[in-house]
Length: 161
Image (spheres, rainbow, N blue to C red):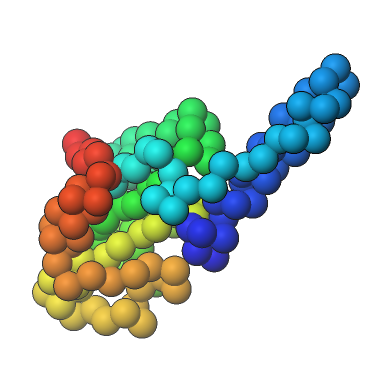
């Protein structure tokens, strides 16, 4: 499911909820409620760096993503770029220990909210992995750091810790 598929659905659900709430007291305004169209996507854009394999680190990143979704709902586009030891979270058969719960959260975030996950091709080459070794929804970019830079050039805020 692409980001463009998920956002209209979430925007529609938000609009329906708002219309239902407003409909009891303001039927004319509720009927006129429209989801704003934007060719540039959501007004908030954030790219996370994921470069460690420790479960506590990965938990913190995933929790931060969850907090952003809760705060901004449809008004945020989120991308996670993984390289180094963090890449194992996105692999079908990780070579380092990876929490199955974290992998399921990543899958759910992609499928339910359109969060995009990008794997660093350089790291993959070093490990001997190819696209087929990654979870099905993961996109591979030649250089993870370049993907972050290009997203920043498109207005994404860069979050790393």
